[in-house]
Image (cartoon, rainbow, N blue to C red; front, side, top):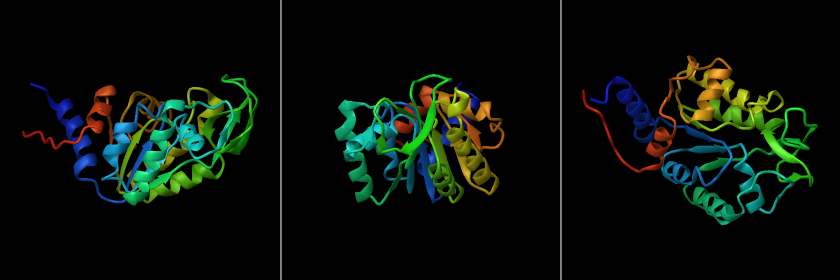
Length: 227
């Protein structure tokens, strides 16, 4: 027997993948585009909006010809990022990238910080969080949503200087949930973030499945558990 926890996990994921009310916003963050490619492709036929933040955003900016300084970038995924943007346009899915970044001169809690356009970061500096109007713009998209999937932080939230963007997303998801949206938070870092900021009981469901939840979201399927 799989049990009630497995039933709750599958039913929550299935609600997002098969029964999502629209607008449906997927929030994807974290370090690598490669970890999220299959999730993005699977969501293209379902989501109305896809918010991309965290380190993976800079691969998209570089793919579009931007200057990203020393920010994280998967050089071998630049063509993939372009293809994702083109496919989203074809399918009328709105991809939201952070226009402004909180940048640092080193990857450290005591780094000097500044703000810069995400596509024009000076050499020697790296984007470690979303900043400025990006936080408000992302929050506005989330608050208008009826279904929300959140997987991945917007920055290096483990360091206090770079947690503001992720906290802004958590605030918006909690507010949307209070106003009737269904919100699913999955993936280790996202779960850590909602727990860190005290929002675990303010979203609809927090998955404890970790990588298993991500694998579920990558696959095109229709699975319903019967009592």
